[in-house]
Length: 488
Image (cartoon, rainbow, N blue to C red; front, side):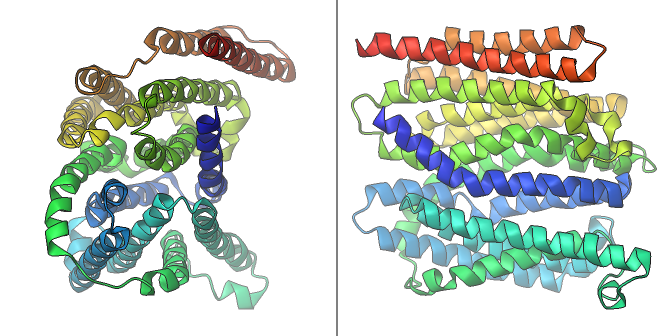
């Protein structure tokens, strides 16, 4: 049990800044959706979709490569130095290219009047890529508290700048009071303040990391890099394909729907997607701790049994999150502006989609441990094909609902395929029957709650949350009994 307590503790430390940060960023959604139109918020979602792809390219699988090669090398500083130097050089080149061609790029993505968006995001992406390697090193060294502190600073700066510009300064501008603050807000910039806040957070984070970066001897071991690239390149492809599954729909909505409604639909879908990010919060925090945890325990004699039990706990927590969200959607919906609420039907679909994404990640340990990372690329490429086909076929007919159902189909197919392949190459005795029962029970409770309503809203909400508590108590009692049986 000490192994699981350690994983839980690491998850909590890594997750604290992520959960708090994402939650506070989640609280920015009302700030955005009550201040900007659906079309303006659609622009924000589209541009950040591009960013997600570019950040994958700029880190090109080097975070996971750092874990893998550091765990096998007797000279960890050389591994870190080679990877950090490589990513730093490519990031500087990237920033220079986007800065030089900001005008043509802004025209290409249909924002010809805002080339500054391109230069801002060039700086954000370049600094974030370098920071990601530093954060990965701290994770590899299990410096969870240091990781958490710097992540928290990043989040607080970003949120503080957003609140300052879009609430305090904009409020002063709109009311005509406090002219000193009002002068700091320019309505022509509008959503640009979101990007400026992000840039400030990224820059300050990198500045705070500079002592750690400068303490590293910048050099590239070319022989080592030639060994790293074949491992990392499939992860890059897998990352791009994975990001296609995650964010391509927000780009395609703009180009597959009529021009007069495309950005509005993108904004509605993006705002409602933010509600489903509650599931993603846990998955991301789990991933931060689980990836180095899986590698560090791969040589244990009972490693596969450990992985199987971790999967059980993972599924239980995800289903509690699903039920907790949907049972409280009656008040959670007020976190987005009224014009955006017409898209709330996507939330349960996207929650389940993100659950399957998390399962896919947990299952992916088989190809990472065996060095067969190309299978990760194959799986995500297959998912990307489902994503592209589903969106191209159904967005023109069903709009953003097609995006949600296609995402669910994609991640469910990837989870099943990874499970079947894992059984062949690195078999782990997952308790699939119990896992499926946990999922089925949560879905049954959700459907039941949707069918039965009480006139008194407070009573209805109380009973819904009682169902969540009963579910949690039931599954944890089953797991506790199973654990005692195994120990005896």
